[in-house]
Image 1: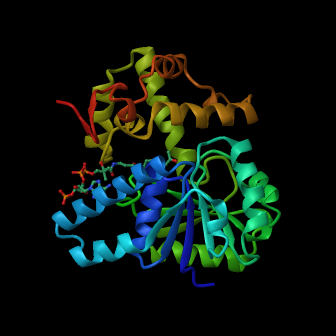
Image 2: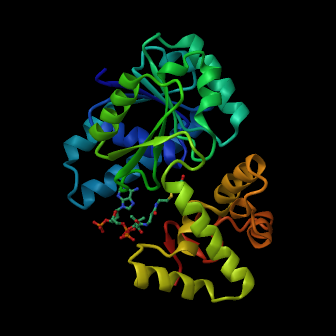
Image 3: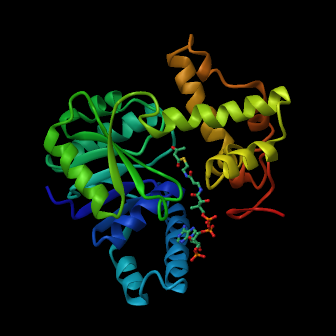
Length: 290
Ligand code: CAA
């Protein structure tokens, strides 16, 4: 199937990025949010990102206008019924996701492919809840979606090969390099990345090195664009904690997944990183202060 009409459920940071790259690639995109205000906020983020691309000479102004014209918002799930692909990008809550897919399963045409952008839950349970597990995959983008070149396509136990292939082709169409992964915790990237970020927190907790020196070590010693503590701040301490807690609940005997006291304490204090303006670093928008 050549995916032309895309539904995106949730227009937060990731959802707006996914809607944007799909519309830039020529797809017609219907974005669902629970309120018109939230949709407006997401669209403002998209318009800001398009303006930045135009300003940098990376996108012609008329292409930005055409992209905007391909984006529609709605608060009615039924408006997604004709989509070839619906990507779920709502809050990381498994029950909420299962409920959403059960509803979409009743509303959408039978050919619609369902995809979840989850970074932490197994896709199998959501696939079953949708009533069409053979047309269900994981489609995991990376933050910031507009710039990161990777997308993971996760094959569920029951996903049909042509559904996986159509979704992989969609990933390539929106300018990403898709990699295929099985439905295992963290898929490929987060299985490696989350323990790395967490080990850096444990190093700070043990007093092995300062968080700045840990970051300098990985930036200059390994060529990472952001050291692990900066990246943890960038991704969100709460997001990382919730991924670890989900894995710890499923694999209580694996010490790698046991969240550190420092991480839990900082989340409790509202030090979430970039999104709250303070984590290990102080943030001003997308940049570390000073
Ligand atoms: N839209 C359009 N343009 C944007 C943009 C956006 N949203 N954000 C930044 N830009 C532009 C900037 O204006 C800038 O343009 P110029 O180069 O023309 O000046 C360019 O993109 C680069 O931006 P920055 O100056 O902010 O540049 P940077 O060189 O510091 O790169 C970065 C920023 C790409 C985020 C880089 O630091 C990086 O790669 N960091 C690591 C990010 C990463 O690892 N992400 C994965 C997180 S894990 C995840 O997402 C999975 C999960 O489930 C937790």
